[in-house]
Length: 167
Image 1 (cartoon, rainbow, N blue to C red):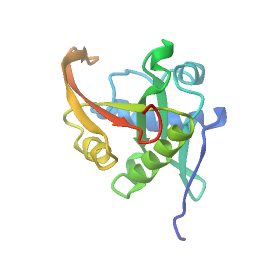
Image 2: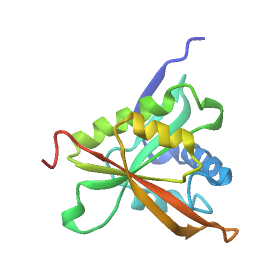
Image 3: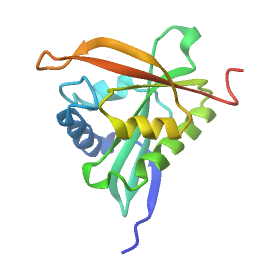
């Protein structure tokens, strides 16, 4: 059977798949400070209503990407944190690159001018993916947060500026 990667907008019915992929990222210890995936309502309220993309192969969810506002202040209305998660069995297949590109295109349509990514230094695959998609390294936020086990972690801040919005 030939694999066909498709993208579509996320709906509430996708929550079990999104949650499962997110939970794997939590367990990995190198994707997020979050300690649990929470609920659909919490996820829905904390993410922008646009630029929520689901990746599927043969109707199986293999990843998702979404934007979170960095602030509720109007001056930051075009700035968002980009999030991308790929199901474990689908790493290193180009899905992350295709999905991130799709989300970037959606963010351009929605008039975002800056996308940020906060990445643990140990997450080499995510760093490479974001650099490949024109995210620029801004700096290191040293010991910005602690994991559930009490270990303090640095986060690398990357930024992607739109070439069409916010000039």
